[in-house]
Length: 140
Figure 1 (cartoon, rainbow, N blue to C red):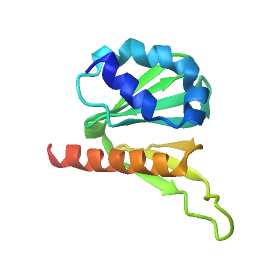
Figure 2: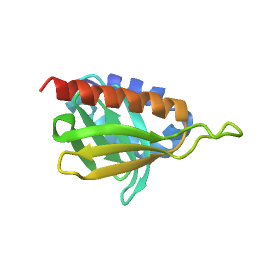
Figure 3: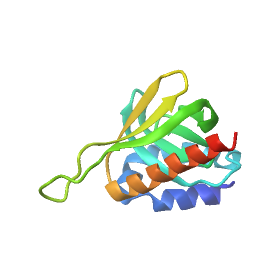
């Protein structure tokens, strides 16, 4: 695609996620021209060894980019699925239960990304990733 598509996805991120991911933005823009398909959205995942992760969701893959610049590409064809887990609204108040984005490999491995920030945004982009994964797997 282009840096324009990545910038649009960045602009859709809730402001709190943008603040957390500001260190990853230059890395995301650096690989934007190498992503040759539409960008469905970005998910800001909790810290790992190399900082927070930005998950770039596309129709055929998830590109994980950390704030430290480490990158990993997860192709849906190599996965058994992706899932939104948790996030139910708490009985009292406006808070939600902990929310996770899971990536399931065909070999049985599981990557669990804790998500914070805007619950509705994360749920919407996570659901789009689940649907993209199913479509990609059906097309094989």
